[in-house]
Every structure is written in structure tokens, then in C-alpha cells.
Amino acid sequence: MIEVSNDQWVRYISKYENLLWNIARRISGDEATANLEDNFSDLCAQALNSIDSYCRKEAITVDQALDAPGFDKYTKTVLWNYKAKKGIPLTKRMGFRRSEEHTSELQSQFRISYAV
Image 1 (cartoon, one colour):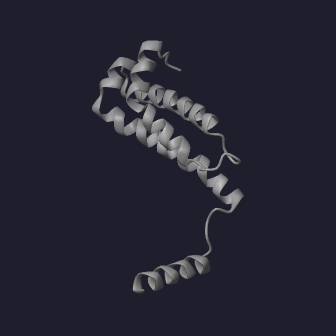
Image 2 (cartoon, helix red, strand yellow):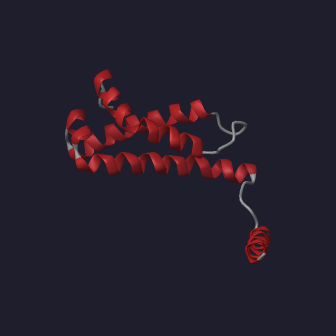
Image 3 (cartoon, helix red, strand yellow):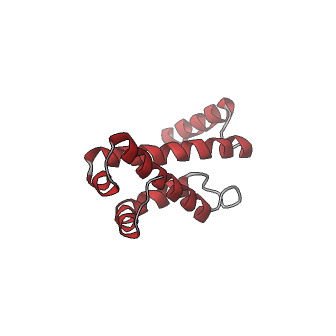
């Protein structure tokens, strides 16, 4: 793994910290199933992986990666994909998804409320 200096990590965090917290909150939305700080830590590990894999793929240094236009899209994709991979098992385990019948019932109620 490529070594990321403290200064380089500070540069990354200054740009992506809000995104990391936003994604961490969206992983489950429920403290009982996933702790926010744990989600944030897991995303930081994924951020480091995104830096490492981008540098290897492009054969560039960390500083070059942080300045590269393609890195922004790459790291965001890695982070959101991690959210999807971690969130799907939580959603299945906790039954957050509604059945089609329940969704249809809600849609009918919305139509009725808008008609009134």
C-alpha cells in the first residue's frame, strides 16, 4: 500500500470530510444497526484504499493523485460503492424495504390527500 503522509491526509479530509460524514449517515440511518463513528472510520479506510488504487492505476504519486481531475470522481465512486455494499446487508437484515403492497397503499393515501 502506498504511504499517505499526515499532510496529504489533511488535504484529502479538508476536501472530502463532509462527503464522508454524509455517506456515513446514509449507510443505515439507525444507530442500533450501524454506529456513525464506525461507519466514518470504515469510509476513511476506503478513502485510503481509493488513494492507493488510483495511484497504482495511474502510476502517480499521492500528491499528483490529489490534484488529478479524475481522482475526484474515482474516490467518490469508491466511497458511494462502499456505502451500497455495506448498506444492502443492513437493509435486508433489518427489513427496511417496503413491500409493493405497502408502497401502493402509501401512494393511494398521497393521491387522496392531494385531492382534498
